[in-house]
Length: 75
Image (cartoon, rainbow, N blue to C red; front, side, top):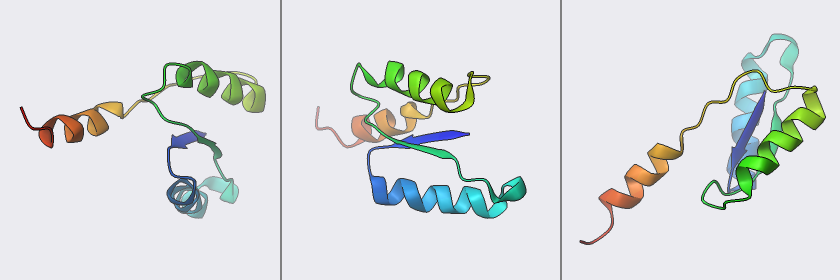
């Protein structure tokens, strides 16, 4: 499993939580990146494939971030 976020400290805390419930206590690959940066998707795929040899599933929650931005933007 690979996870990503802009905040390295917060990402590490999530990785700790994942490892606590993962079979064998395996920690996910942590990739600090900003999904609003156009180069990030390529970086995520390359680092994940480099670590695990392939990418089986990709789940993105960027909409949550965008929804927050839109709700808090003055029109």
